[in-house]
Length: 80
Image (tube, rainbow, N blue to C red):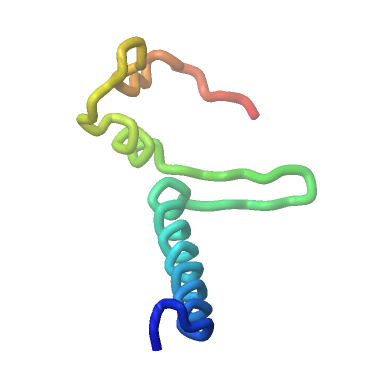
């Protein structure tokens, strides 16, 4: 069995798809705590601290980009 074998290639594709779904789900769970769906709206709840940590990591910042997340910048809750 080698990488050119159709059965092997199919199994690899299935494994990659399963891994991608698991990683995507785990990544979303880091930033989304709850999703409520009603007939009128979809509400996505998220912990603000997780979002702050996600954007405030000490990474190189491009010139002209906002380097930090400042909660005072938007003092009122957004209305959706």
